[in-house]
Image (cartoon, rainbow, N blue to C red; front, side):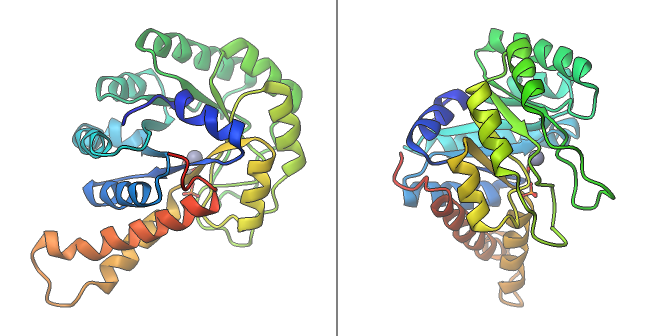
Length: 275
Ligand code: 13P
Ligand code: ZN
Protein backbone atom coordinates (compact mmCIF):
# COMPACT_ATOMS: atom_id res chain seq x y z
CA UNK A 1 0.00 0.00 0.00
CA UNK A 2 1.46 3.33 -1.05
CA UNK A 3 1.94 5.79 1.81
CA UNK A 4 3.83 9.06 2.14
CA UNK A 5 7.33 9.43 3.55
CA UNK A 6 6.00 11.01 6.76
CA UNK A 7 3.37 8.33 7.25
CA UNK A 8 6.02 5.63 7.15
CA UNK A 9 8.65 7.42 9.28
CA UNK A 10 6.47 8.67 12.12
CA UNK A 11 5.68 5.28 13.70
CA UNK A 12 9.31 4.21 13.27
CA UNK A 13 10.57 7.15 15.33
CA UNK A 14 7.92 6.58 17.98
CA UNK A 15 8.51 2.83 18.28
CA UNK A 16 12.32 2.80 18.06
CA UNK A 17 12.99 1.06 14.75
CA UNK A 18 14.07 2.42 11.36
CA UNK A 19 12.57 1.91 7.91
CA UNK A 20 14.96 0.45 5.31
CA UNK A 21 15.29 2.47 2.10
CA UNK A 22 16.63 0.34 -0.73
CA UNK A 23 17.98 1.85 -3.94
CA UNK A 24 16.34 -0.06 -6.78
CA UNK A 25 17.39 -0.08 -10.41
CA UNK A 26 15.24 -2.55 -12.31
CA UNK A 27 12.28 -4.89 -12.02
CA UNK A 28 14.32 -7.62 -10.36
CA UNK A 29 15.70 -5.46 -7.56
CA UNK A 30 12.16 -4.16 -6.94
CA UNK A 31 10.86 -7.76 -6.81
CA UNK A 32 13.54 -8.92 -4.36
CA UNK A 33 12.86 -6.01 -1.99
CA UNK A 34 9.07 -6.41 -2.25
CA UNK A 35 9.27 -10.13 -1.47
CA UNK A 36 11.44 -9.44 1.59
CA UNK A 37 9.07 -6.76 2.94
CA UNK A 38 6.07 -9.03 2.41
CA UNK A 39 7.71 -12.03 4.08
CA UNK A 40 8.85 -10.08 7.16
CA UNK A 41 5.79 -7.79 7.33
CA UNK A 42 7.99 -4.72 7.21
CA UNK A 43 7.37 -1.16 6.03
CA UNK A 44 9.72 -0.40 3.16
CA UNK A 45 11.01 2.44 0.98
CA UNK A 46 11.83 1.91 -2.70
CA UNK A 47 14.12 4.73 -3.72
CA UNK A 48 15.44 5.76 -7.10
CA UNK A 49 18.55 7.84 -7.73
CA UNK A 50 17.95 11.21 -9.37
CA UNK A 51 20.13 10.29 -12.34
CA UNK A 52 17.72 7.54 -13.36
CA UNK A 53 15.02 10.17 -13.72
CA UNK A 54 17.41 12.51 -15.53
CA UNK A 55 18.23 9.72 -18.02
CA UNK A 56 14.57 8.77 -18.58
CA UNK A 57 15.00 5.38 -16.88
CA UNK A 58 12.84 6.45 -13.96
CA UNK A 59 9.85 6.58 -16.30
CA UNK A 60 10.20 2.83 -16.91
CA UNK A 61 11.01 1.95 -13.32
CA UNK A 62 8.19 3.94 -11.68
CA UNK A 63 5.31 1.76 -12.96
CA UNK A 64 7.21 -1.33 -11.80
CA UNK A 65 7.56 0.10 -8.29
CA UNK A 66 3.93 1.22 -8.20
CA UNK A 67 2.79 -2.22 -9.34
CA UNK A 68 4.89 -3.90 -6.63
CA UNK A 69 3.52 -1.52 -4.01
CA UNK A 70 -0.06 -2.17 -5.13
CA UNK A 71 0.47 -5.86 -4.48
CA UNK A 72 1.85 -5.29 -0.98
CA UNK A 73 -0.27 -5.09 2.16
CA UNK A 74 2.64 -3.43 4.04
CA UNK A 75 3.13 0.35 3.90
CA UNK A 76 5.59 1.35 1.16
CA UNK A 77 7.04 4.61 -0.18
CA UNK A 78 8.24 5.41 -3.68
CA UNK A 79 10.99 7.97 -3.02
CA UNK A 80 13.28 10.15 -5.14
CA UNK A 81 16.84 9.83 -3.76
CA UNK A 82 19.32 12.74 -3.88
CA UNK A 83 17.05 14.86 -6.08
CA UNK A 84 19.34 17.14 -8.05
CA UNK A 85 16.87 20.00 -8.55
CA UNK A 86 13.40 21.00 -9.62
CA UNK A 87 13.46 19.08 -12.92
CA UNK A 88 14.15 15.73 -11.28
CA UNK A 89 11.63 16.48 -8.53
CA UNK A 90 8.84 17.28 -11.00
CA UNK A 91 9.64 14.16 -13.03
CA UNK A 92 9.47 11.99 -9.92
CA UNK A 93 6.21 13.61 -8.79
CA UNK A 94 4.68 13.02 -12.23
CA UNK A 95 5.73 9.38 -11.94
CA UNK A 96 3.85 9.04 -8.65
CA UNK A 97 6.59 9.42 -6.03
CA UNK A 98 5.26 9.65 -2.45
CA UNK A 99 8.52 10.94 -0.98
CA UNK A 100 11.05 13.39 -2.37
CA UNK A 101 14.65 14.10 -1.40
CA UNK A 102 16.28 17.33 -2.47
CA UNK A 103 20.05 17.34 -2.10
CA UNK A 104 21.55 20.81 -2.21
CA UNK A 105 24.10 19.89 0.45
CA UNK A 106 27.14 20.97 -1.57
CA UNK A 107 25.84 24.55 -1.63
CA UNK A 108 26.46 27.06 1.16
CA UNK A 109 23.88 26.93 3.98
CA UNK A 110 21.83 29.89 2.76
CA UNK A 111 21.52 28.54 -0.80
CA UNK A 112 20.82 25.03 0.43
CA UNK A 113 18.00 26.44 2.58
CA UNK A 114 16.57 28.53 -0.27
CA UNK A 115 16.54 25.65 -2.75
CA UNK A 116 15.19 23.16 -0.23
CA UNK A 117 12.43 25.51 0.84
CA UNK A 118 11.37 26.04 -2.78
CA UNK A 119 11.11 22.28 -3.27
CA UNK A 120 9.18 21.85 -0.02
CA UNK A 121 6.65 24.43 -1.23
CA UNK A 122 6.32 22.68 -4.59
CA UNK A 123 5.89 19.27 -2.98
CA UNK A 124 3.37 20.55 -0.41
CA UNK A 125 1.08 21.37 -3.33
CA UNK A 126 1.33 17.72 -4.36
CA UNK A 127 0.94 16.49 -0.75
CA UNK A 128 4.36 14.83 -0.81
CA UNK A 129 6.80 15.10 2.14
CA UNK A 130 10.43 16.09 1.62
CA UNK A 131 13.82 14.93 2.92
CA UNK A 132 16.60 17.53 2.88
CA UNK A 133 20.33 17.11 3.42
CA UNK A 134 22.48 19.26 5.64
CA UNK A 135 26.19 18.54 5.95
CA UNK A 136 27.37 16.80 2.80
CA UNK A 137 27.43 13.00 2.83
CA UNK A 138 30.07 12.29 0.22
CA UNK A 139 31.62 9.23 -1.37
CA UNK A 140 34.04 6.74 0.18
CA UNK A 141 36.33 7.72 -2.74
CA UNK A 142 36.56 11.35 -1.61
CA UNK A 143 39.99 12.49 -0.37
CA UNK A 144 38.49 14.14 2.70
CA UNK A 145 35.13 13.87 4.39
CA UNK A 146 32.89 16.89 5.03
CA UNK A 147 32.32 18.32 8.49
CA UNK A 148 29.68 16.76 10.70
CA UNK A 149 26.26 18.45 10.59
CA UNK A 150 26.06 21.20 13.21
CA UNK A 151 23.18 21.26 15.69
CA UNK A 152 22.53 25.01 15.46
CA UNK A 153 22.51 24.89 11.66
CA UNK A 154 20.20 21.88 11.67
CA UNK A 155 17.71 23.78 13.83
CA UNK A 156 17.83 26.77 11.49
CA UNK A 157 17.59 24.54 8.40
CA UNK A 158 14.50 22.69 9.61
CA UNK A 159 12.78 25.88 10.78
CA UNK A 160 13.37 27.71 7.50
CA UNK A 161 12.80 24.91 5.03
CA UNK A 162 10.06 22.96 6.87
CA UNK A 163 11.52 19.65 5.68
CA UNK A 164 9.85 16.50 6.99
CA UNK A 165 13.04 14.43 7.38
CA UNK A 166 16.70 15.36 7.58
CA UNK A 167 19.73 13.53 6.17
CA UNK A 168 22.73 14.29 8.36
CA UNK A 169 26.47 13.90 8.04
CA UNK A 170 27.59 11.92 11.10
CA UNK A 171 30.46 9.98 9.55
CA UNK A 172 28.98 7.84 6.78
CA UNK A 173 29.79 7.97 3.05
CA UNK A 174 28.41 6.40 -0.12
CA UNK A 175 30.10 3.29 -1.52
CA UNK A 176 32.47 0.65 -0.17
CA UNK A 177 34.36 1.79 2.92
CA UNK A 178 38.12 1.26 2.95
CA UNK A 179 37.83 0.87 6.72
CA UNK A 180 34.77 0.70 8.93
CA UNK A 181 33.39 4.17 9.67
CA UNK A 182 33.15 5.60 13.17
CA UNK A 183 29.83 7.38 13.51
CA UNK A 184 29.28 10.40 15.73
CA UNK A 185 26.22 9.02 17.49
CA UNK A 186 26.25 11.71 20.11
CA UNK A 187 25.84 14.34 17.40
CA UNK A 188 22.93 12.40 15.90
CA UNK A 189 21.19 12.41 19.29
CA UNK A 190 21.78 16.13 19.80
CA UNK A 191 20.40 16.97 16.35
CA UNK A 192 17.41 14.66 16.76
CA UNK A 193 16.42 16.16 20.11
CA UNK A 194 16.86 19.70 18.77
CA UNK A 195 15.00 19.39 15.44
CA UNK A 196 12.39 16.77 16.44
CA UNK A 197 12.27 15.36 12.91
CA UNK A 198 13.18 11.88 11.71
CA UNK A 199 16.86 11.67 10.77
CA UNK A 200 18.13 9.77 7.73
CA UNK A 201 21.35 7.76 7.62
CA UNK A 202 22.86 7.62 4.13
CA UNK A 203 25.69 5.31 3.14
CA UNK A 204 24.28 2.38 5.11
CA UNK A 205 26.30 -0.27 3.24
CA UNK A 206 29.22 -1.48 5.34
CA UNK A 207 28.31 0.36 8.54
CA UNK A 208 28.88 -2.08 11.43
CA UNK A 209 25.59 -3.43 12.83
CA UNK A 210 26.16 -2.06 16.32
CA UNK A 211 26.60 1.46 14.95
CA UNK A 212 23.45 1.19 12.85
CA UNK A 213 21.54 0.18 15.98
CA UNK A 214 23.19 2.99 17.93
CA UNK A 215 22.11 5.51 15.28
CA UNK A 216 18.50 4.30 15.49
CA UNK A 217 18.58 4.74 19.26
CA UNK A 218 19.65 8.35 18.62
CA UNK A 219 16.77 9.25 16.29
CA UNK A 220 17.61 7.80 12.87
CA UNK A 221 14.32 6.56 11.35
CA UNK A 222 15.41 5.78 7.75
CA UNK A 223 18.57 3.95 6.69
CA UNK A 224 19.66 3.87 3.04
CA UNK A 225 21.23 0.84 1.40
CA UNK A 226 22.53 1.07 -2.17
CA UNK A 227 25.97 -0.41 -2.79
CA UNK A 228 25.43 -3.66 -0.89
CA UNK A 229 22.14 -4.28 -2.69
CA UNK A 230 24.03 -4.01 -6.00
CA UNK A 231 26.62 -6.46 -4.66
CA UNK A 232 23.86 -8.88 -3.64
CA UNK A 233 22.38 -8.64 -7.15
CA UNK A 234 25.77 -9.32 -8.77
CA UNK A 235 26.39 -12.24 -6.46
CA UNK A 236 23.10 -13.72 -7.71
CA UNK A 237 24.20 -13.28 -11.32
CA UNK A 238 27.42 -15.20 -10.57
CA UNK A 239 25.44 -18.00 -8.94
CA UNK A 240 23.28 -18.46 -12.05
CA UNK A 241 23.92 -21.80 -13.69
CA UNK A 242 26.11 -21.56 -16.77
CA UNK A 243 24.15 -22.07 -19.95
CA UNK A 244 21.08 -20.26 -18.63
CA UNK A 245 19.98 -18.06 -21.49
CA UNK A 246 16.34 -17.08 -21.06
CA UNK A 247 16.55 -13.80 -19.21
CA UNK A 248 13.65 -14.43 -16.84
CA UNK A 249 15.39 -17.62 -15.65
CA UNK A 250 18.76 -15.87 -15.54
CA UNK A 251 17.24 -13.30 -13.17
CA UNK A 252 15.82 -15.76 -10.62
CA UNK A 253 19.03 -16.00 -8.56
CA UNK A 254 19.57 -12.22 -8.37
CA UNK A 255 15.96 -11.74 -7.20
CA UNK A 256 16.60 -14.33 -4.49
CA UNK A 257 19.92 -12.82 -3.33
CA UNK A 258 18.43 -9.31 -3.22
CA UNK A 259 15.52 -10.69 -1.18
CA UNK A 260 17.94 -12.34 1.29
CA UNK A 261 19.96 -9.13 1.57
CA UNK A 262 16.84 -7.01 2.15
CA UNK A 263 15.58 -9.44 4.81
CA UNK A 264 18.88 -9.19 6.68
CA UNK A 265 18.69 -5.37 6.73
CA UNK A 266 15.00 -5.31 7.70
CA UNK A 267 15.87 -7.45 10.74
CA UNK A 268 18.91 -5.30 11.56
CA UNK A 269 16.73 -2.16 11.66
CA UNK A 270 14.08 -3.90 13.78
CA UNK A 271 11.43 -3.16 11.15
CA UNK A 272 10.17 -6.75 10.86
CA UNK A 273 6.65 -7.26 12.12
CA UNK A 274 5.87 -3.53 12.07
CA UNK A 275 3.41 -3.68 9.17
P1 13P B 1 25.38 3.14 0.02
O1 13P B 1 25.44 2.89 -1.45
O2 13P B 1 26.73 3.45 0.60
O3 13P B 1 24.66 2.06 0.75
O4 13P B 1 24.51 4.48 0.24
C1 13P B 1 23.18 4.49 -0.18
C2 13P B 1 22.58 5.83 -0.07
O5 13P B 1 22.87 6.60 0.84
C3 13P B 1 21.60 6.21 -1.08
O6 13P B 1 21.23 7.53 -0.96
ZN1 ZN C 1 22.62 8.82 -0.08
